[in-house]
Image (cartoon, rainbow, N blue to C red; front, side):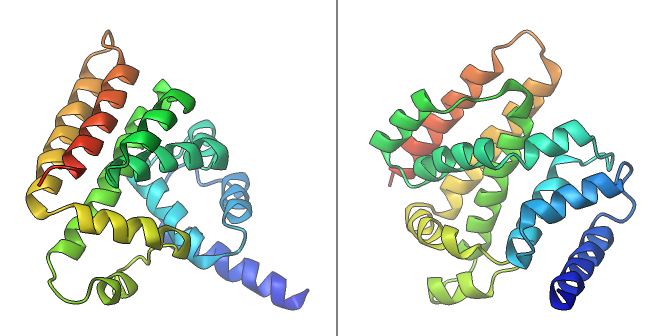
Length: 201
């Protein structure tokens, strides 16, 4: 029990340090992050990266935090994103019809795609052994994500990554500035573009 408590205390310190200066970091929100990370530090760093990216205004909204940490929804979208980035057309099409794309989470989805593209860009800047670079990358790639990440890295080059990053940037502006457009259709179109671009030479 002492070991468990010590681990929880260290995890709590990491969260408080990483989110220093953020409004709305209540005890309840800290506990939610601890519970969601399951005291796994690699998972914790991934969750903290998501939170920092999503709450760029440094104001944590408890309801939105729950959406971000919603494992079911995030796992579903992650599967869709990973299939598209690997250029797996069959799986992407199936997941596009099965996955509920929540309008409220569109900016989170975009951030999730951008994070992965930026990680791939980081890897592509280096011509050394791919697996060695991935092992050294910070924050680390979660071990479960490694096979997908390697498959994606083989499909993408710097030009393709920059092309899609430019599209996600324009789409984010569109989503934030136009309340009439159907954001879900635009998000699904982006996923199809991701899949098609992954398969171009």
